[in-house]
Amino acid sequence: MSRREQAVAQAFVELSDTLVGDFDVVEFLHTLAGRCVELVGVQAAGVMLADQRGGLRVLASSSEQARLLELFEVEADEGPCVDCYASGEPVADLDLDIAGSRWRGFAVRAFGAGFRSVHAVPVQLREQTIGVLNLFAVTPGVLSEGDAGTARALANTIALALVQHHAVAYRQVLAEQLQHTMTSRVVVEQAKGLLAELLDLDLAQAFAELRRLARRTGRRLSDVAADIATGDFASVAPEPETGRSRVLLIRRIYPRNGTRTLRAEIRSAAARHGLAASQQAAFTLAVHEAVVNTLEHGGGSGRLIMWRYHGSLYAEISDHGPGLPQDYQIRAGAPSTGPGTGRGLWVINRICTSLDIDTGPTGTHLMLRYALNSPPPEALGPPPQRIQD
Image (cartoon, rainbow, N blue to C red; front, side, top):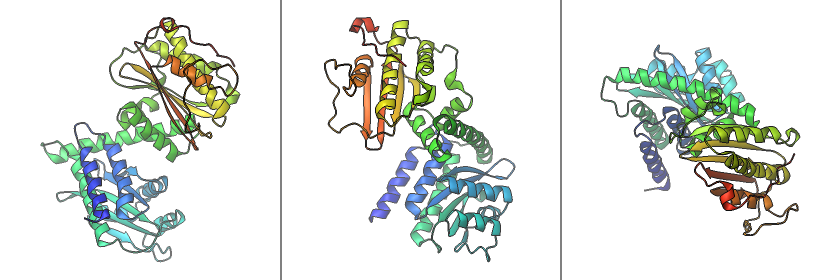
């Protein structure tokens, strides 16, 4: 078996592994779009599915450029995907010559985005066309026989995913799945916009952060997006421990804003989740020390994301600074209070249940975990205090 065949086989194994139980359709489709780019020899891919009224909707894209092109096709009702959906047959523009293209408006935009050819593959369930898999390439020409076969197999996988584990009338199930997926997609777009604003990111970076947050918290992408889109991560209502994760706080860290307000928000989140006053102070101190490290050594700005999961509060503080030395180790004994002594990380390690450090030349991620049933700080001895603005 060639290396390419091995890659294709491994990709389908990984995709099939996600089709279990209550899988997340939106996340699955985005994963599949990314796999198309890796396996088919194109530079971007997207998935469109038909809604209950038969209109196409953009569900997943491997890049922001592809998503905008697909949105244009839907709104203008022109382009290879529109023709592919109508005919149920593969459609391609092998050389996006603007003057000679049958879809002039689409060709202008695709050419401007850097693409030179586009291929649309129908997604079919039995004899019904239910969507289109779009493939965008930066070079003109046809797909190789192997790439075309892989694209057809991936399109078939989309159809199979939508009716997984259902033995009732497939058209009714399909309509329900698609309606849920359309709603989830709207919520994901709203969450992307909020994350972009809160963390000062572009939309592509915001979506990557949203997916990463879903993986970190162990939840479905659409559920985390709903938390963020509705502001649930900032809820002031007390919440009992339920075993599920919950986003608590998302903030950009800027030096000019100080840390007083941020400390109050951190402590409020800790209080909502059952920590005693002394535990609140300890957890707030630990997160504060990580924020101070970011401001002093991590390039002057960063981001904070907090969540609760399975009986613990988590905080991730990340920056784009120079990173820690590869051989860095947290000191066993208390460092001095001078700058550059590593006292902040020592304080965090002293307070938290665990501390994970992922560092390199492009930045540092600190992952703090504080168990809700942690003993009061008095049982360990008073933690050193260094909070100040």
